[in-house]
Amino acid sequence: MEIYLIRHTTPSLSPGLIYGRFEVPLMDTFPGEFEIIKSQLPQKFNAVYSSPSTRCTLLAQRITPDFITDERLTELDFGDWEGQTWDTVNETDLQVWMDDFVNVVVPGGESMVQMNARILSFWDELLTSSAQKIAVVTHGGVIRLILAYLQNVALVNAFEIKVGYGEVVKLSIPTSPDSN
Image (cartoon, rainbow, N blue to C red; front, top):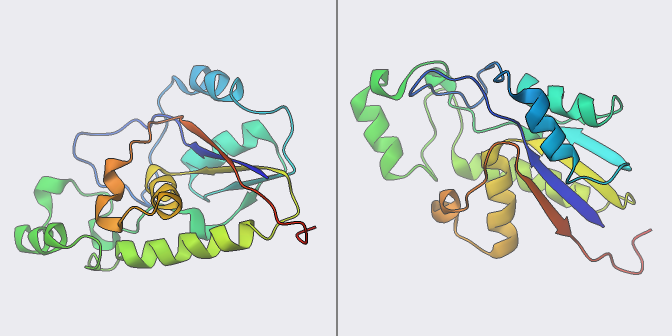
């Protein structure tokens, strides 16, 4: 099984914007970035999954109009902080989160542990698929957590895994003889 983890292209952001689930537009470099991504992909996939975020679905649509959105592929939910900038978040709340971002739940959002559980739920389900070529269009945080899981990296160190905008990570997953 070949799984292509594809991060969305470059968003157009204000400095310091908190945008896990917040909808942000893409840069006008999208067409060129797509061509670079396309050159790294096979011509056809058996299945294409996407985060429901527009910055992902625009890319998935270019790969195939028959993609499937899955809520489990969304970025970290920053809850009440979504759409704010880091310098406007309550300093005490921010420090509590920064001290233990793996376990602390962002006000109105989720923790990295919760995010990891939903992503691994998707991943485990994906591995039961009979599809041989699969694309997953998603976010940097999602890809980092999948790679951290596969590389046995602790969640606290997941951000050390670099995943650029428009990056394609190809994984070859052995399939067992009884998985048809």
